[in-house]
Length: 114
Image (cartoon, rainbow, N blue to C red; front, side, top):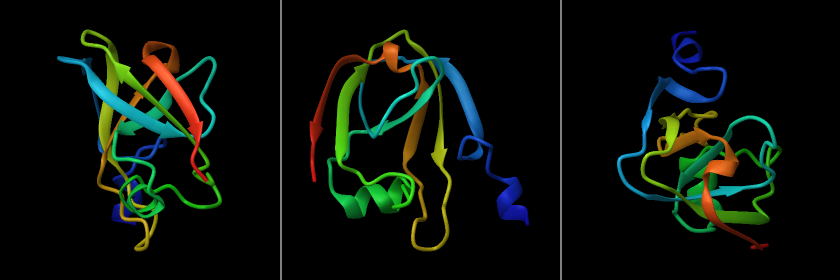
């Protein structure tokens, strides 16, 4: 389908853009991170299940949203960003997502939220 072709293998709608962060960006993510590759981070929108499942299109079978990590992507850090692709009608996506090494995100703190 046309919709399936518009989504990249890493879940970005219409592809991503690679650049250096122009200013510090406060980000968050749920769950484990890659120790060697890139991980997905999103803008800090809080720990609410509805907003994260809806706009970050996080399916329940992928992540129970119990561990939230916050941090900052510092200005000058290379990263990829794009729009979160939909995962069906119930999880439409649409938020911004950033793909980069978790080691590049500074000031990380994690907490249990559920």
